[in-house]
Length: 372
Image (tube, rainbow, N blue to C red):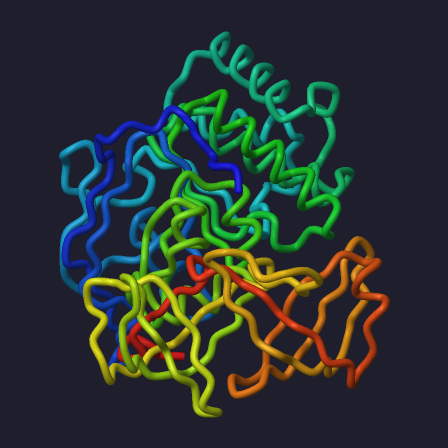
């Protein structure tokens, strides 16, 4: 997995400390601490109701925290009105003025800030070029496609040179091809501007593709924050493991150690090894995690550092360049792997195969953190 590296440095531009948001008896955010680094592209990722949008709204000034503090550039802003925070905002619904042209929509935030007319003309022209709408300044929103309207909304957010841009699922209403195209454009724009961006989505692929760091939200808390590869390769909790990418998650118990690894026994009696972690102890109940791409159909002699299980094919699903193969592994349970299209096509339900994986590819997580 390729990391997304930008101009981000280690200096926080935003600090949230012990931030909570309570609606009546419902706690949407519970004592959240978070540093947002200067120049980074950070994504708040999580399912509906996890608290990601509430956190963004408190940051942007559209919601006030029940308790806690929010600082930007060392200044407390949690009670500052949204229009005084110098934060650009992009919503999914575009929020453009329908009676204004594109050029007038972009000019508006500059006029209310008292920017000189010549400077407005210059900035509007530059912003239109940045979002590839140079020839559409005189059109009204109704004359634009959804993707073009979202580009205008993005241009309006960057035109007054904010310190921070927040984007609340801005691509969610677009079709797949257009969404992927705009993801690429947004990533390039962030690289060119160097402005800190906070992006909210429930789409894990979008988060991994765009972000320097991802904060995974669940039930009003951040379960883990890290680079896309850290979250994918080393999830800290079963929730993160299940939410980021596809995963085989098997309940088991640590029954021993072997050469620095833990031995995990499953309900069916079979055992597998995985690298030990500091918290691992005998008799601990764990979630044993294997990414589908770490499993392969064995056709030759076992390799050093690998372990094998016998399995029966339950189903195969053709995906074009590969097949998803669903298996019942002896003494372990259900597994899913991805095979190249040729090998996958040769399999049929009922076939018995050998499945191989490296010891290093397994990851054990404590089930005490599993809130799914």
